[in-house]
Length: 308
Image 1: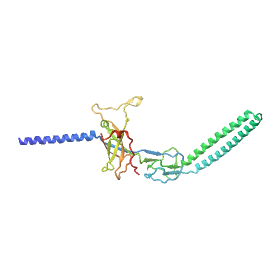
Image 2: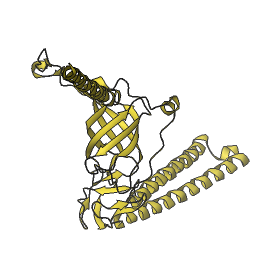
Image 3: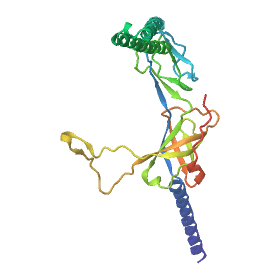
Image 4: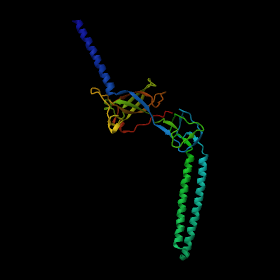
């Protein structure tokens, strides 16, 4: 009888432990959604030259860090300096023509004032129109000068933000082509984490909920963050137009329905010492639901400390 009671107690203990484990798993995987499908993201700026020309100065190196305003490369400015000099000369000529036209108009008005019959209305109108045409010529020359000045300024291509140079393919002497991307610059102050959660896990996630990101690069240095937003849509193949303008529908099994994954954007609030974020690297994301307050949901999120 005593042995039977011990057996029942042992069974009850095993059941209790199993229930505790189930409750723990439920809390951490349902109440606190978790995904292994996380990815580091950032704003990547394509640096595009505004003018074409040979590169005569290239002070940067691939994967180097730069500050906003640093020179990335310089295009030979001589052609554009000559164009600016020419535009300035044309402006001076146009201004001289305007001064002459104004003098002619003033002289004609004085003559008509003294002797109205000494100059016809047509001649007077001609001088007024000449002055207006000269004014338009000055404005046109000013615009041409400003355009030439900007082209000369565009010879110096500078970093628009603090960041990292990526995929540098330029070389000294190579030709920069206007409006053609030349390199990518990763904005150092724009990092965030996208966690792709199953759709049945996102119902309780709120903006401001605390999140913990474990990067594969640094498995022992968790990154702190908060939920910034939840994606409002994902692309679907079903319903797209296929052959003969008919909808494309993928075959499915009636007894299996795979949950879609929805991106949850996590704002990085604190980086452990020695952790460097790199676009495209992966990790796991844990969201602690219920940790956001009403204030957290309404207030804008502060930017993390710069990584440079």
